[in-house]
Amino acid sequence: MLSDHLSTTYAALADPTRRAILARLAAGEATVGELAEPFTMSLPAVSKHLKVLERAGLITRGRKAQWRPCRIEAGPLRDAAQWIEHYRRFWDDSFDRLEEYLEQLQSGERKEGHHS
Amino acid sequence: MLSDHLSTTYAALADPTRRAILARLAAGEATVGELAEPFTMSLPAVSKHLKVLERAGLITRGRKAQWRPCRIEAGPLRDAAQWIEHYRRFWDDSFDRLEEYLEQLQSGERKEGHHS
Image (cartoon, rainbow over all chains, first blue to last red; front, side):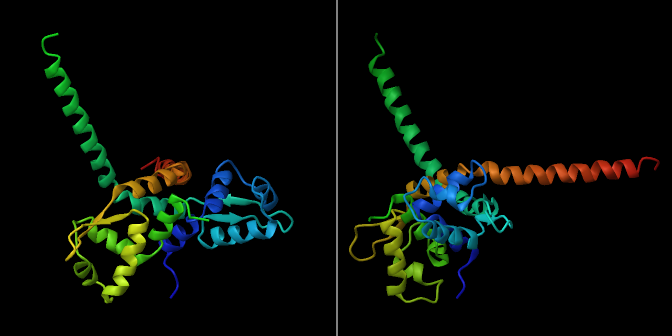
């Protein structure tokens, strides 16, 4: 079975080197050589990661045969973000509960400090 | 090497059944049996997916030995969302360009319809 679009994206993001490559490309286009530099990694190893990112549509590569610069593509990142966004209320709720608790603590302090 | 936290989360999300399980748990706690129902899947197969989600911290399971209900946990989802959010400007930019283009089209139409 072919993997669905969203699964391919998340699988591509499930690696620290690939996320670091995307972070680098967020600053602008780069060649394989430029991408390999900050990592102690061979060009073939970087190329392998780039192929995973390219298959997921997270990057595209220029057509110039010699240096083929890589650039980041927004579409799959947007889709991945949109899926997670459906669950935002869960972490917002956690913060709401924390905020409530801190307010209770504060109002408790105010009561204790009533006569001062 | 142990996988980093964010990679474990994205790897857990890289499966349509696991994302469907999280969608079900977003509606409230559920037992393994309840989770298995909508999928044509054996309990052991569902349990395997639950273990991946549990290792990623995306769900926790109750302590009652008999039915151990699963519940969704916000933390890893929030972290995964925050990582992707850094790249929002890329997809917002794409929409900005689309909007610009549509505005140009509209102003063109206004010019063409100038005498009507």
